[in-house]
Image (tube, rainbow, N blue to C red):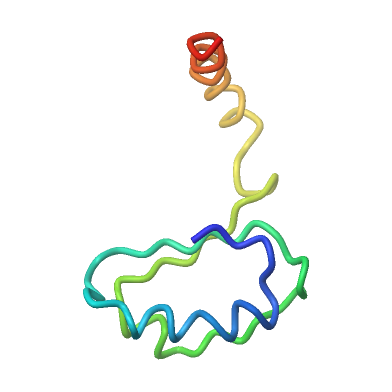
Length: 83
């Protein structure tokens, strides 16, 4: 799940999304990258225990400058191959 919204939409969908899956042991990674709908969302603790669930943040502070630079050659190769 790539989440640009956060806030109330995340609160409303998180637990039903996790608990209604047919295989809760299958990994679900929620990547939080934006907060268009609000800066906070209450995450019930049962959501963290009821399924194979991982919540990650992604943004400029989550990767070092060296990390970005290390990925550039592969990114350039991928773009060049698509041309």
